[in-house]
Structures are given as structure tokens and as C-alpha cells.
Image (cartoon, rainbow, N blue to C red):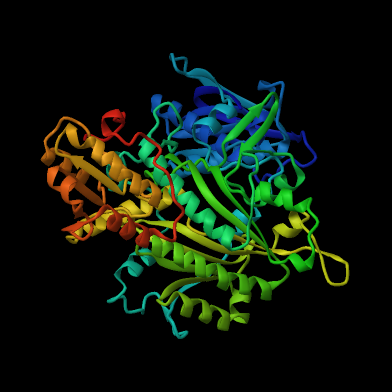
Length: 630
């Protein structure tokens, strides 16, 4: 976009003759004002089509800023293609001008937009002060890189966004047994977190006014930290955090392998112009990172859908192989708006366990949903977080499948929020979400289950049916646990809530970076700690040894600050007897047990999880200190 700004004493124009066949219709061809005004001659350029929404907002920002500098409330928007040698298509230009006009009016300016597609005469009287004449150039690539809200392509079909805004929906609570109650009439006395979640969902406010508690905790425990050398919402994982992250990834992957999934890996970036991807993005625009390769634009994926769909579309699949499952731990990217970013709750780079289950029809899809709810519920219980469940359902599907929904809620075993919408605004007819509610009364979605009825055809995914004919399947989109970062958010927020009611904050034993810390009373017992550690190594238990020259009290406090679940002070008595004095954090007790008993206790409590090795030195003296203060 290029723009010439003139601060003028009055302005007049007359629309003389159509310059384009599809020039917009006008009721009044003549306009004149003697009031002061800021006249903006605007030329939309071809590059604006990459992101019309972002270009419009940035143009409005420029005009508003200039108007404030010259203390002007009256604005004129004048289409003037002659400012550029690379004009956009007329449709893009008109959309930009209309959007700019609307945005400025919403900000309280008096705006006149000159008709588009006409030859015009105009009168202008430049005020002649130092800021009365200015030119502006908008580089849309820079705007996208800074804060693109919505990424769409030229010729965009915003069906999903428009439909979502227009569709009407109803919220209600369904209880086990099938009882349905309007959200305003439900008795929340025993379900206070459900009430908080309902309020959050119906308010639709995703902004964060202050940092949530988990941000301080993730630094204190040396799990995650901000990366100043990257974009906002992109985080770095020190070794302790990475140990936890890998433990979660391995746990979810193991569950999916047991479920019968094909585990795979697909690319991070995709071509905007690929026919299937272009169709998807036009219908479901999202906030993407743009990646330039020469003169070609790609986008960083915001889910594993694209790669998995393109891969399975080229595979030979028989009805005998259905349901067929594809699973991936998918690094993903979504440029959330700056005001919505909030630690691990809402970020721009995340790691998503993503499974897609290919099914033949709705009956097979419903059977798959019931199976998937089993592992989603199991994983969320293992996270040791309280959660609320909601469903968004297309009314036609809901009306025909009330008995199915009752079975779903019976399986979950507690009241759930249901939103039934009248028109299909997205690719799914059914979507379940498992949500945690944090200390700020905000919610973060973890696991999800969706039934997709569009993308099988969009991506030309087929299977061969019993009669040898190719058919497009339905697809279940599922994240068994939610993004790894969201899991950590949920676990830490739960720990904070536990602390607020007098419980000991802790991480689930199976994912905590260090499960046991030995605190030798002096250097002479370090070797014995290493011998004890061999038993834990054999059992797959993660441990470290505080071999620093510090008092035992200080070593114990250091371990407690890091929420180490088991602390063993090792001295002469322990070495002679073989009985260890173990502090158990969560139980707030101290017990005597052998190293074998300790290993068995931890094994019994974590037997469902794969064994994850420690990703940093076992001796504390050899460990770099990143964000912790102990």
C-alpha cells in the first residue's frame, strides 16, 4: 500500500464517469466540505493480497497516527491507483478501502470514502504546515512478521469466519443420565470450576491482563523460559524442562502405539498455493507464520493435519484397514495476537501430539469417539489436573444422536457443557474439549476429539470399499493430551491452586525431571550415593546427587525448592545399615526404606509411563544453573 496524505482546509469531489465496468454504485456523485480534514490518497498494491486484513489494520493505524499528530478528526479516503506501478486487483483494493473506513469509524473518526472505480474531479487546499504533506509506504511482509492477525490469500473465501459469526447456538449442561439444563438454571453448588469454565466460554475474552502464576513457577523449577532472541510466544527448554517434555512425549506416543497408530513425521512448512491447502486456508483462515523461500511464500504449520492428509491421500487404503490411525508429535506454530499471549496457556510455538483416525462413516466415527475418550480421560487423570469437558455439536448431528451424547457424558461421569450450533461453520460436526481452569479463571484446552466431514474430500483421501469403489472417509482429529506446553501450564496452575488450599504443590511423579535427590552429609559419601544410584538406574528412576560443599539443611531446602519428590540424606548411619531416611514431598512424611524399596515404590507409581533418562549430569556440581536460584 502506498499513500499520500494532505491536511486540507476543506475538500470536494465529483464522480464524473465510470472508470471500471464494476465500479461501485453511488447515490451522491458530488461531495463538498469546508471543514478541515486529512485527505488520504491510497493505492493498494499486489502484495496487500497476501493479508488484506493485516494491510487494512496497518493502514488504519497509519492514518489514525497521522490524524492524531495534526489533531484532526475528519478523514477522507480517496482511491488513487496512480501512486503505484504494481496495483492490486480492484476487488482487493476495494476491500482494503472499505475495511480501513470501517476501522477508522470504530475508532471515533468522521470518515468520508470517495467512490471506487470512477473518474473524479476534486478540490483540495493544503494547509501548508510542516506535517500537511506526507507519504507513507506499507510493506505487508513486515506487518505479517510483526503481528498478523489473520492470514488469507487473494480471492479469499471466508466461509468459516463469516458462518461462525452468523450462526446461532445454544448452551446447556448435560449430566450423566441425560438430564439437560440451561446454563443459567443449572445448580453449580458442587461444580464451581464448571461455572468458571462456562463463564469463560460464554464471555469469549481471551486477553491476559497479568501474568498467570505458572510463569513464575516454570522459571523457579527451571523448566521453561522466554527466549529474547526469538518472537514472543516462543520458548526455550533447559535440560530439566526438556527431560519433563520428553517424558510426556514418550508417554503419549506409547499410548498411541498401543492404540494401533502409524507413527510418522511430516514437514514444518507448506505451500500456500498447493490446491488442497489453498482451499483449506481460504475456508479456515488462521494466524500463520510466513516463510519466504526466494520469491515463494510458505506457511509454518499450525497442526499436523496438512502433512498427514497429503501423505494418506497418496496411500492405498482398504476398508479392511479401517479405522486407520496416523500419529505425530508435531512442532506447530500459530501467530496468536500479542494481547492474548500468556505464558504456556497461549503461545505461538508449541508441540502437539496429533492423531488422525480415518473411518468409513458416522457409525464408525462414533465408535472411535468412545474409544478415544477412554485414552483421553486416562491421560488427563495421569496429569493429576482437575478438568472440565465441553462439546460443540452441529444441531442436525445432535438431534439424530442424543443417545450417543448421553453415552459420552455417562462415560465422562460428570456434567459437561454442550454448545449446539445451527449452521456448520467449520469442518467438524462434533468437537470435544478437555479444559483446565487456572487461577485467573481463564481456561486452557488440553485434549480434543473432533469428527471432520469435509477434509477427506478436500484432500482427496480415499479408501476402497467392499465393492471395489473409492470412497472419501470421515476423519477424527484428536489430540490425546493437548500441546506439551499446555500440559505444563495445566500441571503448574493445578499446583498453584493446590498450594492456595494448603496442599503441597508438586509435579506428577512420572514426569518430574528428578524423582530422587541424594544429599550426602559430606564428600566422603558421594561414592556411596553413586552405588545407590546404580539400583535406581536399573529401575529407570531419575536421580541426582547434591555433591556441593553445603550444609545438609541447605541441600534439603534446595531440593524442596525444585519440588524433588524424594530426598535422601546419606551419612554414616545410612551407609552402615542400608536403611535410608526418605523425605516424601507429596505425603509430607519421612520414612525408612532400603534403596530397593524406594526403587519399587517409584516403579509401582509410574509403571504406566516409559522410562525417560535424565538429560543432564547427575552430580549437581556439574550442572549449569539456568533460571533456578538453588
